[in-house]
Amino acid sequence: MNLDHLRTYLEIVKRGSFSEAARHLGMTQPGVTQQIQKLERDLGVPLLDRKEGGVGMTGAGEEFHRFAVKVLAEKLTLEDRLQGLSGEISGRLALGASTVPGEYILPRLLADFIRLHPAVEASVQVGDTDTVADMLMRSECDLAFLGASVERRGFRREKFLDDELVLIVPVSHHFAGRKSVPIVELEEEKLIIREAGSGTMQSVHHLLQHAGFDSRLWQHAPVFGSTQAIVSAVEAGLGVAFVSAFAAEKSIECKRIAALGVEGVPLKRELYITYLDKHLTSKLQQEFLSFALLWATSQASA
Image 1 (cartoon, rainbow, N blue to C red):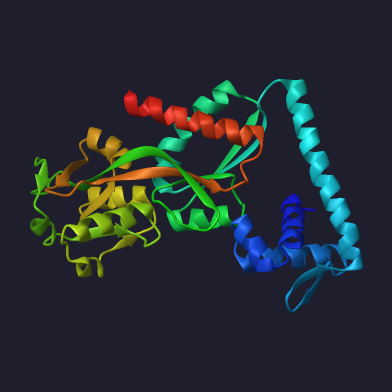
Image 2 (cartoon, rainbow, N blue to C red):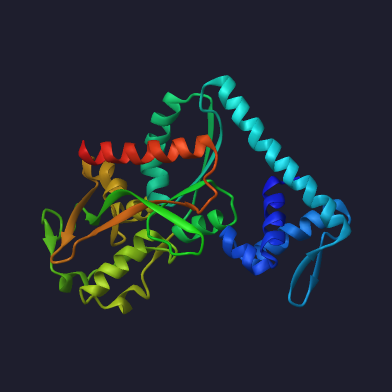
């Protein structure tokens, strides 16, 4: 039995409706409904009486409510006792990350954290920003490292790191060797882009459109599903692209691509740690968030 489903049930009873429970849990209403339907199928009895004006408990639902309260209370008590006995941070940490933080930053952060807390088991799922935000909404990860500020009900975010965006071109390109180019020259180039859900592309679109770039030039651009594929496509001479400086670093050092800026356009964005409000409750989750923010400060000052 999934403990998250127990929490959802208690929240519905407390709020008196699926929609209010979904709002306070930072979930979608269909997601809340699916969890309750799964509970009722597993138990073989209806738990809630759905009627106009609200939701009430059935007789079985009242019995299950007492059970759910007891189980969740016992779980918290057990966690506190085990942490007190072990004197160490341990447990499973589920993280989600958009491409740039997931592939280029989070591995180093996790390595430093687990070096201090070797009893921690961590997993990371990487996708574009929109996909990872959806995972967080469904409670499929504890924290998410995102390449854009995602505004959703129930989300809280902390600024993590600044990310410089660069225009990358093949080393044989006529832009190579220049520090920056006027935006008007960019309109003559064949652009390569990430999918619409990419935080990098969302930031680039916003910055360039604000500077007067004609967004219709994106319409027929080749689309790739990962940052590394974009870098490889530029190396192969398919076109030019905007990527995070973190992603371009190794190829620039190996002189396979060149990087530059766009005149008058501050190509920077912020990376965020995002989590569901009131869901960051375990000692491990809280310790990791604190560590990540301190780690980011040390990286910025290095």
